Amino acid sequence: MSNISVDLPFPVANGAGTPVDVSAMGANKTIVCGGTFKGASVTVQASVDGGSTWGPVHTFAGQGDKKILDLAAEFMRVVVRGRKTAVPFSANCDVGSSDDGSTFASLPLPALNGPGAAVDISGMGVLSTIIAGGDFGGASLTVEISQDDVDYAPCGVSFTGSGGLATQEVSANWARVNVQGRRSSVPFTATIAMGSANDASGGGASAIVAYGEIYADDNGVGQGPLAIGSWTKLITPSSDGLQTAPGVVNDAANQQILVEQSGVYEVEYNASVEVVQSNTGGSIRFGVQVDGAPAAPNVQTYLPTTGGGNPARDIGIAGLLNLPGGGNVVDVAALQGGSTDHGILIRYYNLHLHRIGDVQT
Figure 1 (spheres, rainbow, N blue to C red):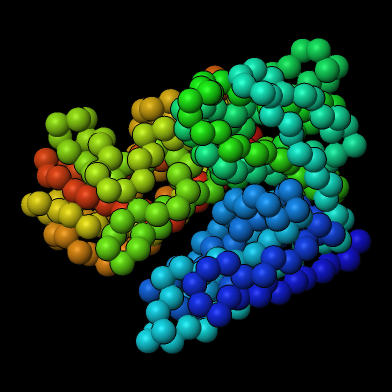
Figure 2 (figure 1 turned 135 degrees about the vertical axis):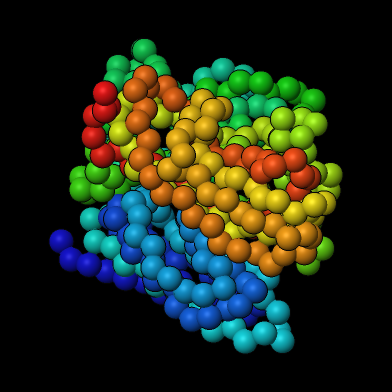
């Protein structure tokens, strides 16, 4: 085994750069983004279906940094947003990994609702990245696995309304997609595929990753894919602090992380948040939730506000979650601080869970 690296080309302006084949790489990847790009963001994306469908891996805002993560990918690329010709832009991005390689499979969808055709994944590795794309408003895609192609159970990856990217350990012989909530009158353009790293070292005891993004144009209007996670744009006391604002992405139909295995998990959350409306100041609390309830005081952070038009600022949460029951739903929510009304815009975020041990009693 040896290490290999690739350079991800940048576009000449905003948009996507040229994809690079990374199928020869193993699971554990180090992404190094260098340079400065004030006011702009650089999002690294991955594909497991030959470059037809893309999911966000990590976003660097304003300046470069390093990110180490587990990911099976066939192609990777960068997407630049917010770049202005009057502002200096100097950025580069490299990805390094082992040469263990990965394998890939598309998961067929049914004609309407129910399970699609099963795919033999017995020759694929354990650490898997699943990417869904397209629009499927009101419907959900749940990946199910089986050892005997008879009895199936959810593997812990599900997408609702729109696509995304999830990475976790999948040890099974068969996989399929179960579609629910699809209506013939609603456009349905979903696709879903998975990639698995050939090496056995990635993922630790259990790694579950969800990455998503909401980005904005110069008018503060939400654009792009529906984010993974429980998000709100407008926070008002009249609706328990959760209400989406008009004119932005409606993420009421969210995609959380379903954690099927009990245990103690490290949780890491990073985001870039802009306050676009604040009637009386105050603060906004961002916190990790388990099954819709605040998880613990050590996994939340506060964003002070002084009125509308605040610049975007980075926030971060890190801590431990004790999930005793299995089957827990983990997401991040923005909750009201005090009795004020706030409009917020999440430019990007990522949420990462890593199992480090058994349940603490």
